Length: 246
Image (spheres, rainbow, N blue to C red):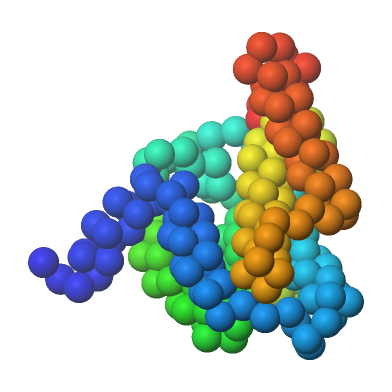
């Protein structure tokens, strides 16, 4: 089997199970906390660093929200457990970068990887991220090339894969849908907050020798949990978040 075919095969497998990648990250980050120290040797320094990490991850969530808010149903950006697409996304954010959701995931996980403020751990997590998504991208683009032919080749030729070029922006064909974002992105939000909360508690336990619950993180956790439960209930048992064509 040619190497590119091996990449595509592994990419399809990883795509199907990509939801488990966060577990790998969390395991690596928790293991790294055996050497954890407060950032700058002070609680204030640690709080400022955690706030910075939260901002980086929030940027990733915003990129994902912007992407999903303009994305119609049955397109290349709405794949589930296998490669499928009835139309190709080339407008909106997809006119500036081919894989905006993966760009969002990068910043989301970069903020989390930086949380223990250990550059070796951050580099290891980003290496895992790159190797993982590189294979998924190979599989995804091979599928799109077969499915859409010259249309895909023309779009891929003018559109960067991962570094957005705002000069290429073309307006999306649909208005922004907040309901679509709420319906699809609440797990990413709650998962980010829960992971950071877990790292915060575990890190403080390593330094202080006992569990400490700070108001800021306690409030964030309650908000995230409440949002998750409320939106999941609305999605599963009502049509309030349903958007035609999304």
